[in-house]
Image (tube, rainbow, N blue to C red):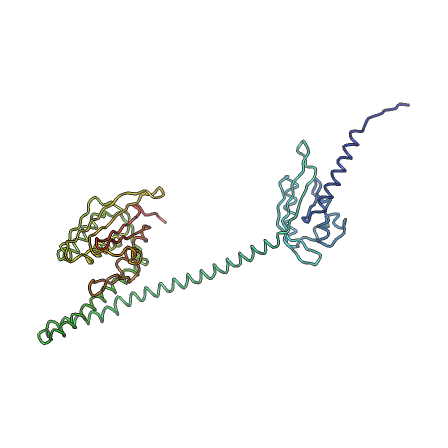
Length: 396
């Protein structure tokens, strides 16, 4: 007879410790409202805590041999299985949002996660997973997405209506350019004839009334032209070009030469920058600013208009800052925003001519060129208009 004896005390103690640890884990897991589950290295789920059984209305042991899949929504089972097999094969963490059926037959969304537990050699021993109810959050997100979708549809509808409205406005502008201007031209024609042919037959009051009719008709023509120019800015696709502002100002001074002589005005400018933009619109911008200064010149003082510029860098992009300053009647600084509004007038139309569209047009042109325009009034010492505009337009 041969006898062999081996001390297995350490192994027994280890097994006891493991058993105690597992009992503690299960006790802790069973007290959690969250679903907890364990799978072996091959992906077979071997443990579910009490919360799972209570939720689904099953008894312990009813989920053996993969029967747990019966509580997963039929539309989610295929993807659930594919992702789980992928994690088993690769060791990647398992993450999936799917629906579990409760004991009332209602499906609720759950976020399931599982991580592998490995030994010292990196070999997977088992998987520990949890499932968290995210149904309320999921429903809120779906409701929010539906609201966003409905809002987007409404915005698309409003945009379509706005486009149609813009087209209608363009058609109206076309009508205004022909149908509205024609009767005004006739009024001017016949009032001019009356003035030339019947001036001697009219008394002073009659001549005064006739001059008022002519003035109103002239203002109507100017207003129609202003509306056409204002409404046509967005519609016209102006080609961007390099523009020498010195040449632009020189051309404008030639066009307003008569008004400059009548006012005895001096327009000073030098070394203005070259910018990129639509030449026709940039011309309109400075024409309206210079014309505005001429319009609101003082009666007892020579008008001086000074145009200067300096370069700026804003958000790593080069800009030109151009100021147009005059010594005219000025305006209250509290109106510095109002004067850019369409048809806005701070002074009597009887005393100062204009349509109230000039500065609104300036603002629209500057914004079209991705710039900004500001005004500062200094009653009775004139006004300063500051334009900040990119030297080069972004190609968007």
